[in-house]
Amino acid sequence: MEKKVHTLDFEKPLRDLECQLEELLESSRKSDVDPGRVSTAAKVIEAEIDTAKREIYSNLTPWQKIQISRHPNRPYTLDFVERVFDDFEELHGDRTFGEDSAMVGGPAKLGGRSIMVVGQQKGRDTEENLKRNFGCPNPEGYRKALRLMKMAEKFSMPVVSLIDTPGAYPGVGAEERHVAEAIAVNIKEMAALNVPVVAIVIGEGGSGGALGIAVADRVLIFENAYYSVISPEGCAAILWKDRKYASDAAGALRLSPQDLLELGVVDGILPEPLGGAHRDWDSAAEFLKEALRLALDELRGLVPEKLLENRYAKYRDMGVFSE
Image 1 (cartoon, rainbow, N blue to C red):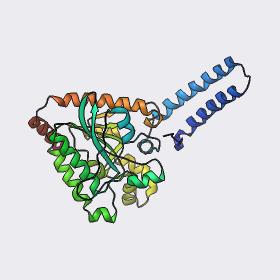
Image 2 (image 1 turned 90 degrees about the horizontal axis):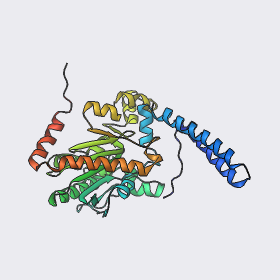
Image 3 (image 1 turned 45 degrees about the vertical axis):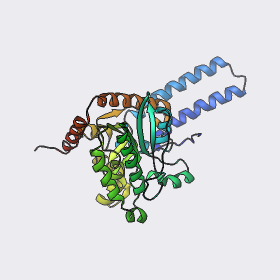
Image 4 (image 1 turned 90 degrees about the vertical axis):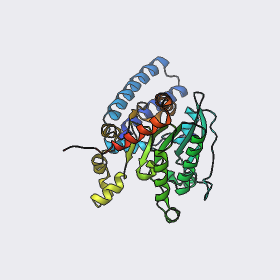
């Protein structure tokens, strides 16, 4: 799918330089300008672009990182599946109520190793967003994910979970079908899965909607993603009584990858191409593929008893503090 360029406010100086370069190259194709002069001018602008990228993306605030995690050109779950895994076969339905297109999953291969992939999926346009419910799963989505995880357990396949959701869908229908119970059951059952589980926050990791597929032996996060008990807007609406304070809430929540690593909530941070994953899907996919390979190799030799013991200890250690 062709990506429509979307520019965040803090990216505008960089986009202006990129437009200058595009205009220069386009005009050179339509005129008899000396190619040497064009090449020299292009190199100057390219150097300015590289400098601007490093200045902008090396000093991002937590709120700016959240904006990047929500970038409409950012690769979503199925974009990564296409680039990281082989022989993916999507499976549908929860065998209880129906299909939820906000949650996708199925068996695949990673370097010849059979695995089960699950993840939330957003849409790129209005039609697809309605189909995918803006990446907000209903209870049947979580039950489908659990069905696939149980299938993976039956066939001794590791589970890979790709997290990218603002949160579970809070609508009346979802509440009637017990979305909170579905998430709670997933948390309980994932804690007891006797196969390795690796979860990666690829974009938004919002509240219980993320946690419902995130109980894992290794939890990783991309450097411009976030993982939080509540969105900055929701936090600002509660504490400041106004969503305009979302940027302040983003800092107070300590939801950046660096804070999460320090707190022990995640086990590692995946790098992104300079400028963010939305600028280079293929490179971001390579980072993800290598991280998955290393994590699964580390977990491969553990017997189920040791796997469960380590997983239990991992989550019991969270929240420990001293005064």
